[in-house]
Length: 183
Image (cartoon, rainbow, N blue to C red; front, side, top):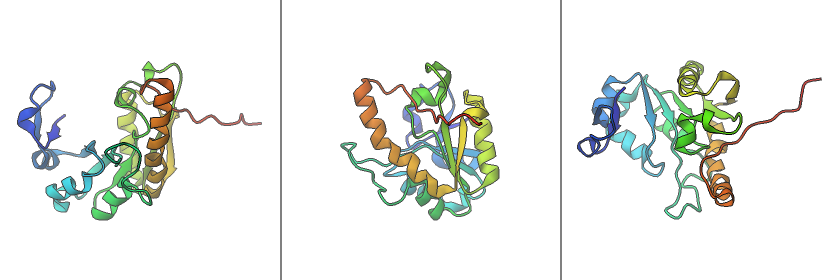
């Protein structure tokens, strides 16, 4: 595993190797975009479309205003904008409906919860699903909600997430899609 950073020299204390964004992209089979959603497309352009072509890009970013009251992509999603800007890069939106502590430790919650996948490339979603399983998200908790346009729902959940976090006094929670039992 290699972590990419805009300032790799400032990130030597993470316990994993850290390299520049370009160096990381050059060696990656899968990239994770965990940058602020308001700058993600610009940062990816600095790497360049040729370097990203064919590499699965898992997007967990959400673009929010500085005061966290508005989305920077109200009629779209960051995932869609990345996919449009980099058509040869299969983009999968996931893990953006929860706090980072839940992303990597879903078993720390009181019960089961749901992680969503949005993307146009079936194989990229399979790859992402396997990585989610490695993080502790069993296939039964993974819900493929469709193409990259469904990333809007995931990203728009950010505003509700902020409200729920305020009501709970905590960011360590997630949602679970509960269905009616089959008859």
